[in-house]
Length: 164
Picture 1 (cartoon, helix red, strand yellow):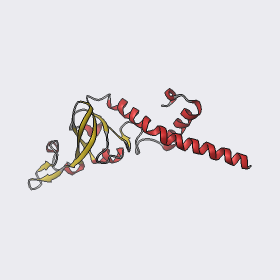
Picture 2 (cartoon, one colour):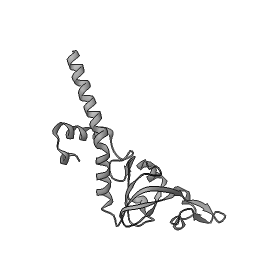
Picture 3 (cartoon, helix red, strand yellow):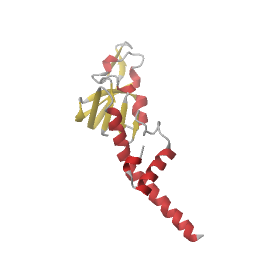
Picture 4 (cartoon, helix red, strand yellow):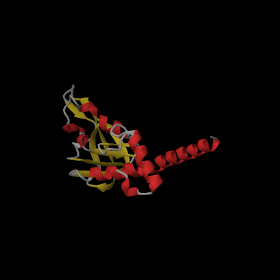
């Protein structure tokens, strides 16, 4: 009974270690693949976030330079993320607050994103070190048990290409 307990404990330690080792690689790979399907892709490092705010007595949206395209009614639900270009076709984009929350974005993070234009990224993909929104591996759009099962396949079988 004691040997079985030690064996199961060892297996649990291996699975948890593999999960935390391999998950960031999977997240970035899924994010890059998903962003590649959009017309506008960006990769940024050293990012900063500027929140859109309402001004002009409630009639216009200000904040970052891209905030002006949003109507005053939805203005405060967006923010502009800018940084140093490390790939793609721009240095800034407009994201919804829901999307940045789902991706676990924090100012200073590196990001990979894809969307239809710089100002329409909220229907696309946003991958950060904290998660991914829109690419199947994020905090809000994936199942923990599925991720653990996929990593267990990798650890046990050693086949990276078998992970979905």
